[in-house]
Length: 231
Image (cartoon, rainbow, N blue to C red; front, top):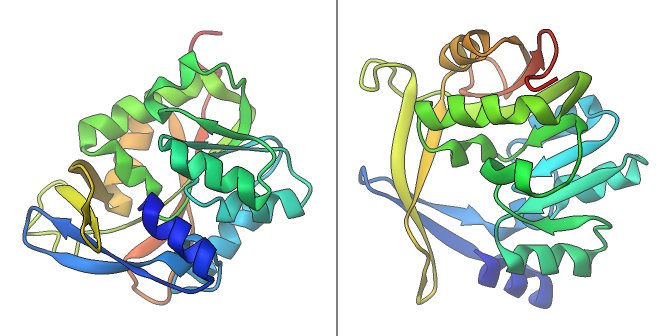
């Protein structure tokens, strides 16, 4: 993906990256979606940017499209991505605070606490599984200020009956031209399942936006109830 994003930035036009899943599905990703906020999820994106407040962590920031928009709003934003190439690209684009690291190892990065943690572009998928989702949300608690929020967008499985538990867990890989990325686990989680997990871990849950009537894509806010663990 980094090579595609670099090519987009260099050439100034969209390129396609193929996402291949181990369940037989594959579909193209557009590099423009990592730079622009007027794509198919524009309504969700705009609501997420409007709802962000205080000190913000943009988790899995990629090319920094949310970070830059939030910087323009005057917010203090920390962009985090596991790929060094993405971090360099973000800095080249004007992101003030871009850090390389794993969201699962947030405690080791010394980035402090946040009023908003944002998982945009369905980035919560990096949790990989329901267990990974529980582990991730639990690990975020000590890094949230009182009154903080976690903003998550995801999409419900196409067929809930075919995927018991309201989740789709797949192994995916990205392909750009003759470049093949390493396989990685990815998660799609329904509203009902995210609400259930949130409740289990002590988060209040609200759906803020959906993409059109009955659409699968949604934006949720998780608000920790009580004090963050470790306090």
